[in-house]
Length: 591
Image (cartoon, rainbow, N blue to C red; front, side, top):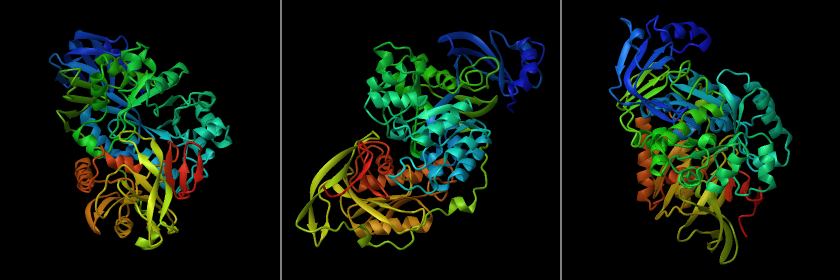
């Protein structure tokens, strides 16, 4: 059981001196030292009270009759992996389910921003996520969401967060800092609330998460940095990453289920030879299928190595760099005395098989098998009853009325494997007074689901490739989390939306008015409390159904869920209308 260092100090000294037995000794491994970037053979690790007491050539004096001994047998002993920026809700799981899914992959620390549930349930949702995070057998630190809504005036969230609530949360146990500051135009313009949230975080000595989703590196970028953000994960090019680091920000390079932003930036290290200290690996968004079948931070490290990165540098970027960024380098991120005893045993640093995982001094997984319980809280009824449509939807609710034979409309263009969209235009036919999609352009609708207004905003989207009478609906709709419905047939769109209303939220695919696949997400319309394998199987059903309907995009569901994210260019949809994110203003659907 992990003890605070102040309570463990005296015992750690006794064990390091060889005068007392340890709880656990890992014997005969290669020490991956992330402080010096060295591999040191023939090392032992002695652990007590969840912390490292000794790392050296012979821990024999620390082995007593009750000491558990794990034979490393010449394998590498590397620090547990850290995800520096992620959202638990994107896995469709609660913190307990997420932890259970990633522990066997070697993730022992997560810094998560629950702004998804904050947009639905407000401060109550943040507290619930924090509460379940605190009781996990690994370290889960919560960032207080900064932007609910993400862009005031461009969307309506379920429960706005105030600067007073941000300041209040900075005093909570387990709150590590401020979640990603998505309202970068507000910071650049000197918005009082945004600056007050950042100031309250800095005054508490905590870290401010950044989110500058713009390619512009001019005065606006410099104003954003001056506003206090400590990092950014929205970088997609080498130049953008270097610009952040030069200004003292942490560049968080992400590999999620649909975001592939490591390869384009890691050349700053592999080719330009820049100091990697301020470059950090993260996932941002991983759905349950990726977690169960492909991995978590182990997948990111392997990918970085495949992109030409020295394995030791990649491990640094997933351990000590992240810990140092949050001011926790004396607590996490390395196998050194006093730190939490988070250790991975692996036989190869390039392919990184995760053969054993020790978290806080406890063997928690071995050869892909979880060995510990991940406790759950009792989620209240208020969290399980969050989808309020206000009425039974009909096909007419999804009709875009117009006159004439054709209309020129704005179209959201999906970009595969990236969060940004393109602002397109197209001439679409009008039949019986209603604008119809054509070719690869289908309809998109945002259905209000927080206040039962019955409101529906309609638009058009390109890139999914659906064929036939198809509809995909989801109550996961970053960041306001209304309901997004994309489809080729209005009646089918209504059927899919009504189905989610009846089951309390989730993701569903309909064709010809019939349900093909569904992932129920009864907690805030965002998460399931079922096991990750079960949720992943259902999520795979969604993927297969979307493919059967003609969509060949990689992780198309993730693209679907971001179509309402009104802080990432270029074009989005919200409950208030179509949003031009390059100008941060509402625009007409008709050009």
